[in-house]
Length: 151
Length: 405
Ligand SMILES: Cc1ncc(COP(=O)(O)O)c(C=O)c1O
Image 1 (cartoon, rainbow over the protein chains, first blue to last red):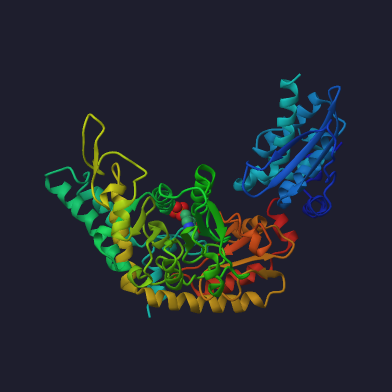
Image 2 (cartoon, protein in one colour):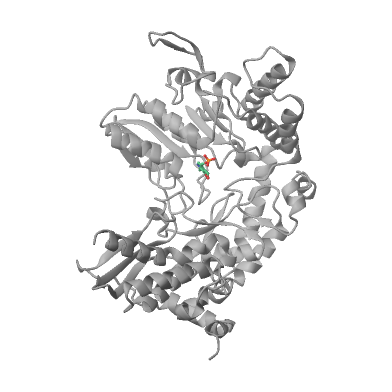
């Protein structure tokens, strides 16, 4: 089987994927539902303003959604994340988030685990925009941590 | 009129980065060699603290520090003793709000505008929270210009202070401060002016304006970081309580708690000041006055009209301040997030700023939260504008995304 990383060497394909998630973001609507945990990432930067909601039950992420005003990278990365983590157990999600953070920091990572999120493999080259690629992921990480701390 | 190519040779940043187009002068400006030399000379030849020593290098440092008061006083037409040095204009505006705020009471009003920088908003907001004063906004047109004929209506007996930018930092609107002072003084209100974006771009005459308090930062007028200048009518300075207490600003104090402050300006300069910065600031002011502030303004107007004419021809941009005379161009490329435009331009060796530019209530006026700001200075050229506009015409969503792939 071809290394998944190689699939992401096709510039036109990657551009298409990013454009698609930016212009038509997935799971891009918040719900009014008390069972969802919510995180508003407004103070991370003064530019992107994103809210992420997660429905976590029995150790599984049942649903993930987001909304907000944000740049291409934060919108697309959060959109791709919602698809990737939905349906995963919390333990799986934590591992995937960890691998993603390694990729963003230009460290060795498990590309198989990241599927479409491999499209962000070169974001580290724009050092001042790394936060854009992680804002939604950080939100989910914080939601999981809060959930675990509160039992 | 100065020769821009010879001016450019005075700036090591330009000489060392010949391909970089620096259109972020609203954030900070480059420093001419003369400023750098003045600072290194302080460290090479006469490093000392001020106001304390009896020895030759300390006396030299004292003299150089005091000389900057003279030079700045000459630049804005006031007396030396009306010039106080603080850390930056943000410190000055906080000092002003603190000082005036001690005499403000619940129900008093401070007038500001939607186009103000955070540093001319948040200190007043704190007085609203802590003392119950009102904050009201003066009427602006869509490009941030004060509607002077509606200003009088803003004044009632509760208005004690009006605090405005001379030139606003996103739209570059140039406010009629002289007329504002006339109206405000008729109503016994004080006028505070944030001259951060005006200093070094236009000639400022505080006497002629009749402004009560005015401040600016050294780094936006080719001077070093770390110095803010606070000008005030002398009686007002003498009445104002300093925000910082410590060495250098008191005349004496006693065990029973008695404090006798020095007179202004020293009373606002607690602790060891940024001596190198203050010394460098004099060199910057001399440099600008040598070139001529009126000529600088004329040249900036010429650049602005050349720039805006070219930008207006592009159909992929929306410009928020097309009719401003001089100052930045604030715009968006249609359908592309401002920060993505700035990142794309950075890959083309062009420096601009994107975001809300610390003017977070401006969206009430222009209807968008984020914009790209291209701010020029007298060392920028038409050739740079040509290259800039060419890159903007090629800024597509695809191109901005490719930067990340
Ligand atoms: C209008 C205006 N006021 C205040 C400031 C704050 O200046 P500083 O950061 O030097 O205190 C700025 C800087 O961008 C400005 O443009």
